[in-house]
Image (cartoon, rainbow, N blue to C red; front, side):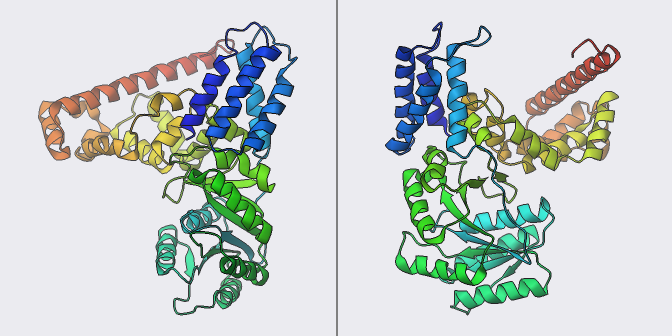
Length: 441
């Protein structure tokens, strides 16, 4: 995410590295490179100039403490200003009503239908709501079918009328159905076009009048940069939407849309989405996104994703097994399955400070675990629970069963033993720290 922008901003900060203090001269050079980096990321020049003018104003005259360098201070100023530019704080999402109605808008290909499914899943699993998805795209049969499939995947009812070409009556009927079936939120997926046209705008404006939505979300493909911002302005002028959704953040995203859309339409970014999995939807936090743009990671989001997937009782059970040095292959497989549910592996690793830049050219995906899972699946239940049982003849059977060779099985088992040893040592240090409160493990 934002790899090119990260690199160019890092280069900009090098101008001030090694300097003893912040001066008007070295700030000017740094700010010029930051502005160029933003423009290259498809941020409108006026927005980039306003942003860098504020950065320059904040930076000049700043006293640098002994504990930090001028470049570190400059990074902090840029991070803070980026967060302000993108909205400062998390925006409230209103899903309260009888039922609450959420209208999804955007151009064709922006990811509206997939996002509708993700939002329904989010409201069901994270907020405890009972959503109804509405197939409001009467022009593209594939959109109705896609929404139906997504609804089946997440266990959410989809309302559609395949033969009805009056979207207004479909929406009215859907809301009536929601009330009669105790659905407390209605998500309307609407038709998109390849470009903005009057008929499209009139249609969705009419849906707004009928549905009286609590939220109108504009879904934008984050890879389209400044074009996305211009489209957002046209939609907002007509619909006065309540928030923006950035999709496809796992692609070759320049960053222009994320950085400048709030400035242009003065509406908050409410969600960000990446990939096709229904779980890959996150609330948008401006400061966290600013950290990621600057390559500082996003530990808060990573921890939240982990907490959402890892059961507390299961965590206690595993902790007990680790303490007794009884962590086995069955436990390891369970951990892999939970990690995979958290989302795209490369994206997750990119949330760790300093890791994103190192893995940017690596092809990392969840398929990386397939070989390991195949080896564990080729073990008997007794072997998974008691790794010490696995001798050479068992290794040969595991290798044959998983399509691996003996060397690969040996390497995996060696890595597993090293991981267990590291867990055991960490556990000892934690125990020692508890016995000696003044000592930090």
